Image 1 (cartoon, rainbow, N blue to C red):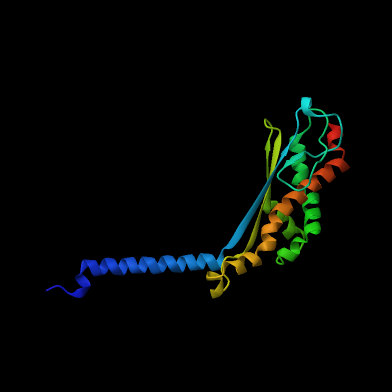
Image 2 (cartoon, rainbow, N blue to C red):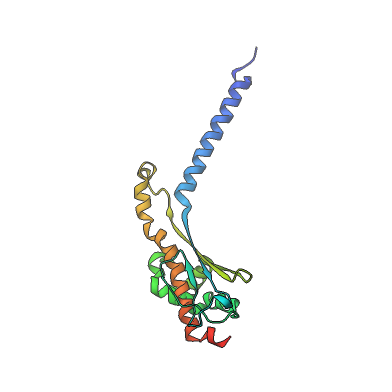
Length: 193
């Protein structure tokens, strides 16, 4: 006679129930511990020599940002890598940190070193020399999706709590691009060629 423990169907049910409970516990752990991430991106398009009108100072035409029209550099040859270096500079990062009050968002950032480490990790750029573009992107971390039992049923509370972090990513991109323009104008980058 077989015992109940030897019943293969019962063993499979226990295994499935254990896997289901383990998966639910893992999902709850992720929801309560892992912060949500928000990403924004802008593409700076630098005109070719034939497209430039001869007017002006830096910056580029922005795709999908709120900075509006900005003059583009004259001439077809200017150093995209230098613009990218200006964008990634400590001067730009500290100016953005002050402008956006980054420490209000992330209180664990105690000094300028922490702020620079955070911003250089959160903001990246990719230069496309053939396309004559610089892509600027920013990632910000918000709060975990669930902080309490009520958040499981009311997603609006979690979304409202994260609103300022969600808005920070595109604001950071715009602020970095604006700082790149200010610094490049200050050092007369497009006139130095």
